[in-house]
Length: 444
Image 1 (spheres, rainbow, N blue to C red):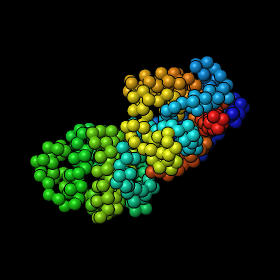
Image 2 (tube, helix red, strand yellow):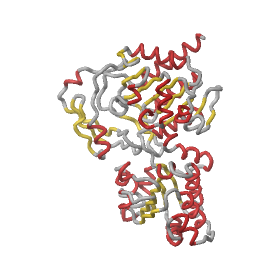
Image 3 (cartoon, rainbow, N blue to C red):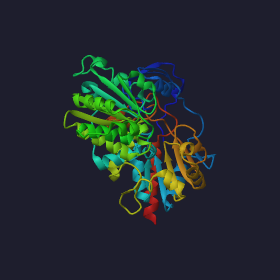
Image 4 (cartoon, rainbow, N blue to C red):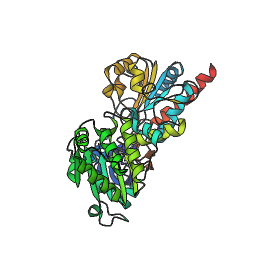
């Protein structure tokens, strides 16, 4: 089940893996040079502090690749037990997908299709509202390469890349010298909008601290000003926490930009308004395109969460929270999303891929997940793998496993692994489960 090369464990030869890809965050930086000795990464050149920790702290963990009810078992036995659980379930759930390759994500969605289950990604608890908004309003988008070469007005709304995406400023958005911004930072205006002063605000030319839970009002204020609508100054300041003159100045700056970009984070999507906030921002970008070129991009977190949404969308037509029980996809956040399904006690089996719901879901959802048979695949031991009926210890994508991931701007990036693992990839496990599920279903 693995191409593990035992000699790699004892080799003292230093190898350099050029242009490796870091899968820690959504920037998916693909210019990292890894200095590898045996199964230890000694240096990650050009990686940020988060990427360096991701690479240098990675170790091959001892122990079996499969546990069934806490006891060591062969991978083949684990695949058989997993297939039996999923094929026999009436309302199964497949959840996670964000920290693995797009190849594995595709197989996970195929399993959900065969068993007529629900498939949901971690987007449902972070940028899910963004996917809902795009379907309702549309999206004016661009690549990070365009931002680097063209962006002269950069705004961050409810996002803190200085801490969450440390190379965002230096590689893509603020510092780089680009084709149409040859002086780099000097040619750019940076605006940060947030409910508190973050580390990212220190890099801004203009920081707007708005009232908590007032993002919707602030965005509609900007929309009105861009459209030339008169507003009541007292009401604007009361609703947003900033004077009307500040919003008027910002609207004029945005209209005067040659190429504007707004990056938004969970500070916008997970506060009051949720998808309505994102709809307002997308509509604002559409309004601004009457005057100049303006785009909007979410600042995605996990390494391949963008890939998860892409794969689920091109397999089902929807980005997350999809039910396949009737033989065709149905999309309804709040009904078919994982935390809601588990919280209502509906799922009777689950497959958890590259995520840890027992560490971050609400109590009712966690309790129900622990009460049903479920399968968990993860490179590390987590609360979710410890309680799983079948737990697979798999190789880490990007470090041990090749494949494809999507950057936050929907650009696919290939992985160049540093060394092999004695544990199988989740792609291998999922492919085996899918094959056996199909056999079981055809035998009925």
